[in-house]
Amino acid sequence: MMTQYNFLATWLKAHTKTERGASLVEYALLVALIAVVCIAAVTLLGKSASKSFSEIASKVDN
Image (tube, helix red, strand yellow):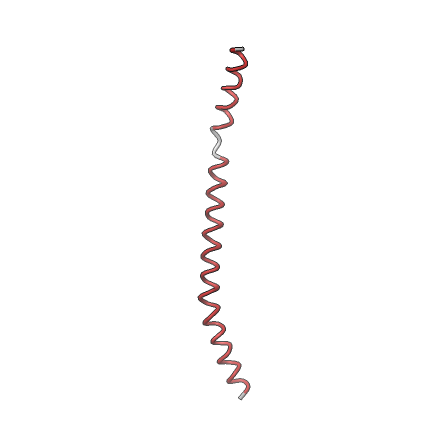
């Protein structure tokens, strides 16, 4: 019984020391931050671009 416990304890220690889960969370946070920045940029630039295109279109029509 003690041998099984030692094996299980050693196996758990070996598999819990990896930082794979931590790096996955970091990448997920980076992707979320990039998405927020992109959405904000499109929102801000979209309004001014729409206004510019409308002005140019009205000048072309005349």
